[in-house]
Image (cartoon, rainbow, N blue to C red):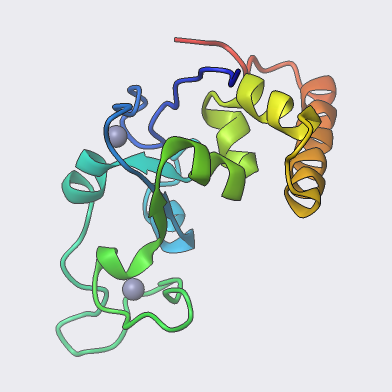
Length: 146
Ligand SMILES: [Zn+2]
Ligand SMILES: [Zn+2]
C-alpha cells in the first residue's frame, strides 16, 4: 500500500492535478519568483509564469540570469525545466521540495519500505534529517496544510 499525498504547486499553491505531470524548475525560476515554495510546479503555471526570452534586446543574458541546466539551449523559461514526470517520481528525485510541498507522509513511508533502492533511501533519509532539523529549529509552521 502506498501512502496518498497531494502536492501543492510551488507557484500557485494549489494542489497539482493528480492526472497531470509535475515539472521541476531550476534556479532561474527561483531567482525570478523568490516566493516559490519548493521547485515543483503544475503544468499550468509553467505556461502562465513562463517567459519568452532570457536575453535583453542586445542579446546578452539579463542581469543575474542563472544558466540553464547543462546540455540545454538557453532560450526561454522552457530551457529551465529540470525534469517532468509523475508526482511520485518527482518527489523522489527532489525530496526537499517534496517535503515542503506536501509529500512528507509518502516520502517517509518510501524511505522505510522494503524494496526501495538503497541510493533512493539514502537520498530520502538525508532530506528527512535536514527537514526534521529545520522543524526543530524554527517556529514557523512549515507543515501546515491548506
Ligand atoms: Zn501551479
Ligand atoms: Zn535562461
